[in-house]
Length: 251
Ligand SMILES: NC(=O)c1ccc[n+]([C@@H]2O[C@H](COP(=O)([O-])OP(=O)(O)OC[C@H]3O[C@@H](n4cnc5c(N)ncnc54)[C@H](OP(=O)(O)O)[C@@H]3O)[C@@H](O)[C@H]2O)c1
Image (tube, rainbow, N blue to C red; front, side, top):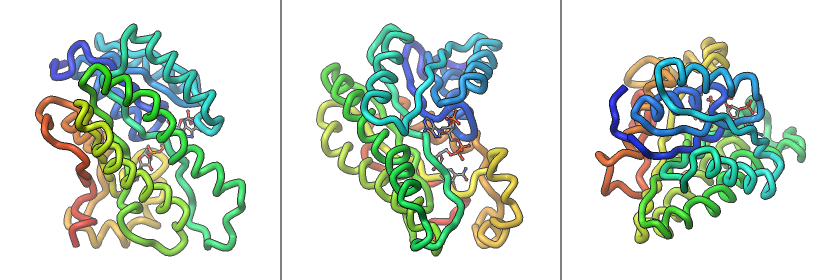
C-alpha cells in the first residue's frame, strides 16, 4: 500500500462487481476508507473482506439506485456514518449495461430504469455530496462515462444517451462546484474486460482490432485513471475527460 489518499473517505457506487471493484481496491490501496456499494450484499461483503485482508479500510453499504431519492439519501447518510466524516471522494460508477436493441424495440420500463440508475441516481447523489464538499472547500468527484457517450452507435441509443448525459454533467458540475474547491472529472473507458464484458469478446473483436492498442482495457487500468484524477497530482484538472480506451476515441 502507498498513501496518496491517506485519511480520505470515498464512496464508489456499483463497486460489488466489474470496474467498481477495481476502483474500490485501488482507492483503498492508496489509504482511503472506501464505502463499497451495490445491491448484492454477498458480493459487496466479499470486496470489503478482500480489502481488509491486506490492511485496507472498506465498509459495505447496500443501495438500490433504481429506487430514487430516498435510496440515494440513505446511501449518502450511511456512507457518512460508516466513514465518520464528510466524503472526500465520490465515484459515480454504477450503471445498467444494455444489450444493443433497435430504438423502437426498447421497452418504456427499460428506458426509465436505465435513466434512473445511470443518470438520475448520479445526479441526486452528487446533489447531496458535492455541496458538503463545497462547504468544506475540497473534494473530488469522478463520473464513469464511456466511449459510447462520445459517439453514436446503432442499437445503443439508450445506453449512449445515459453516458453522454454523464459527460455533460461532469462539465456542468465542474462549473458549479469547481470555484468551491471540488474537482469533477470523467473517466471514459472503452471496452474493458470485466468478467461480463470478456464474455462478449467475439462480438467486440472487430471494434477492438480497430483500436490503436488492439486490446481491451483491464479494470485496473481504468481504476488507475480514477486514482490519478481524485488525487493531488490532478489538483488543477477540472471538467476533463480522461479516456482509457486504447485510443478508440482518438481515431
Ligand atoms: N466494462 C466496460 O467495457 C465499460 C466500458 C465503458 C464504460 N463502462 C462503464 O463503467 C462502469 C462500470 O461498468 P462495469 O462494466 O463494471 O459494469 P458491471 O460489471 O455490470 O457492474 C455494475 C455495477 O453497478 C451496480 N449496479 C447496477 N445496478 C444497480 C442498482 N440498481 N443499484 C445499485 N447498484 C447497481 C452493480 O452492483 P449490484 O449488481 O450489486 O447491484 C455493479 O456493482 C459503468 O458506468 C459503465 O457504463 C464500462
